[in-house]
Picture (cartoon, each protein chain N blue to C red):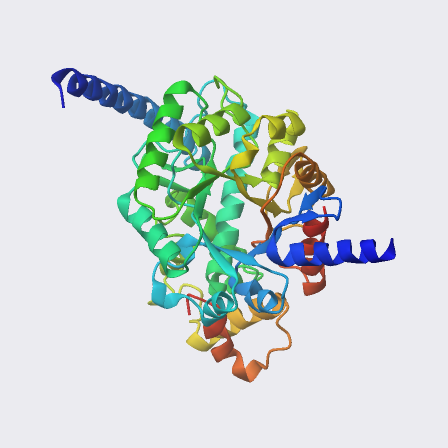
Length: 294
Length: 161
């Protein structure tokens, strides 16, 4: 029995390194251990260099408008075999305007430069009436707007040489006259455009808290076979609302939701996002461990 | 392509164009309510929109501070006029700079007159900017880095320097 247990333990370790489904000697599937990642920020660059278990990093596409300004630390991570995923904040596929060709070209050039397996952005809009919000805003969920979003996504995909992955956003308010719930809208966009899913579990927790819906029901209605990776980030409760700030510690509720997700489907990759008020290295290590073990 | 198909495609595109127009109007009304103090569109929860509006200003300031260490350096000073100036800048420029927070921060510094005659009573040197950046990095756990080598270290980690 001890030998079997030891063999299983080795299998788990191997799976951690290779992201394959762990199998026992009885050929029974236990779980898929996700690859572990983190959002690359200059303030975290040295910390990330020191984490041997980090298998991918996500970069903000708009931080690297010129390839010559890519820092050496990021190039070194790539040489080490760490996957680099460009993540855009500015395509505004949920906007009324068609997506600007130069934004798509830039995202694609990053994917080619870093040999990335895919790129991502959000189902949201960030500009309207010549005003840039600097923030991801929710789209009114109607059939008419769904058609526009899908056409925008199609145009992005046509300009990319890698798959396009779409993320759900966090919000503290909602449109008053939506025709469908968020999960239905996200599912429709993914299926009608044949796109992949970046599920932000913390955003899901935020919305389920702020807009009062069942997060597990949401998870169960998503096309999780399209799941490419998962975001986890901290936030803060303020005046009864949950703000997905990315500058506070991870919340237990988000971790529980991640655990529930892992119980429903295979999660290929999971990563931590931290954008400001950077904690100690020990706290970051704890948060990475928490999402790896949720 | 047969005429019937062409007519169908033209009709579909016209329908989509009209959907885009309606979508543009509703999104413009929302974004102006959130960022420009315009009236809240009908049906929205006003308290929620107000809260989101304030959160957007806080986020914009955080992003500017993070993108340009000098903004972080000058804001926490006891001189509240800087923070007031920052809020005034945001009111006068409700749109975030299209090239992102770094250029938004530069626009604010330019607004303060830091590139020419200083309205602050002092003009930051390049060294002050780098020291501020180094301080930000040290706060993020880089205390082991020798201060004398911070220039080369910054170059290694920061894309904007």
